[in-house]
Length: 168
Image (cartoon, rainbow, N blue to C red; front, side):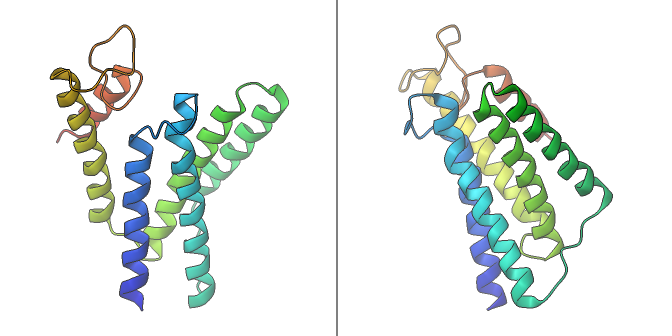
C-alpha cells in the first residue's frame, strides 16, 4: 500500500512537471493554457498529501520557511483581489508557492524523495531542450514573434535561466 501511495504521488508530480512545461493550447491566452492544468495538479497533490496524513494519522509538520510562504501567499491573494487586475497571475503565483509547500510536505511524509524532485526537474529540462531542437530545425514555430528560439516558454530568458539553474 505504501509503495502504491508513493508511486501515485511520484507519477502525479511528474505529470505536474510535464503539464507546467507544455502549452496545451486549451485556452486563447497562452499563460492560462500552460498553467491551469499544472495548478489543478498542485491542488490534487495537496489533497493527496492531506489524505495521506489523515489516513496515517500524522501531523502536517510546518517549519518557519513554510509559515513565511503561507503568509506571503495570503499577502499575494489579498493584493490580487484588492487590485483586481490580472487575477490569473495572482492564482498562478499562489498555486506555484502552494506547489513548493506540497513538495516540502511530500518530502516530509516520504511520499517523494530528493531524487524524484531531481527527475522532475530533469523532465522539464529535457522538454525544453526538445522544444529548442525542434525550433532550431524549423519543425515547430517559436512562441515569440521577435525570437526564433524560445524553448517551451514565450520568453527565451525563462528557458535560459532554467537551463543555467539545472546545469551542474
